[in-house]
Length: 160
Image (cartoon, rainbow, N blue to C red):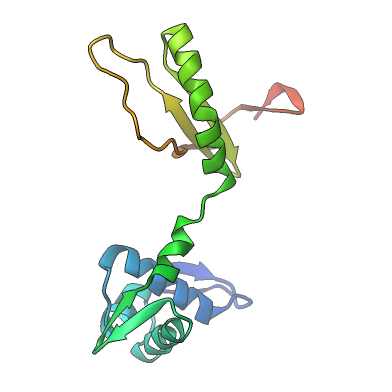
C-alpha cells in the first residue's frame, strides 16, 4: 500500500529515511540555511527524523552546524554539479550547431529524448545588429514531455 510522506508517494518497499534525507537536501537548494524545524517542515518529516538526517549529513561532511543552523558544504554542492552525459553532449555539439547556424543563417537545435522528457540545446539565429555571445555554457534545457510521435535510431517510421 503506498504511503504519503511529505512531497511524494512511496511504496512500503522504499526507504523512508532516504526519502526524508533527500527532501532535506532539496530544501537546502531553496533555503540555503536550515534549522531542525525548517528541515522538518520542508521535508514533511518529524523534528526528530529531520534532526537525525541533519546529524547524519553533518557526520558525513555534507553540511556544517553552527548553533541551531545547518549550512551546506562543498561536498553537498558538488552532488548537483556533476556533469551528466547529456550536458557533455550539449557542450560537444555546440560548436557544430553554431557552424551550421552560421552556414544556414537559421536557428539550429539539437534535441535528446531522455526517458519521457525531451531536452534541447540550440544556436539561435543571429541578428545582424547583435554580436555573438561568448562564454555562455551550452546545456540541454528540458522543453517537453515525450512528443506524441517520435523517431528512433532503429525505426524509419514515427512511434506513437
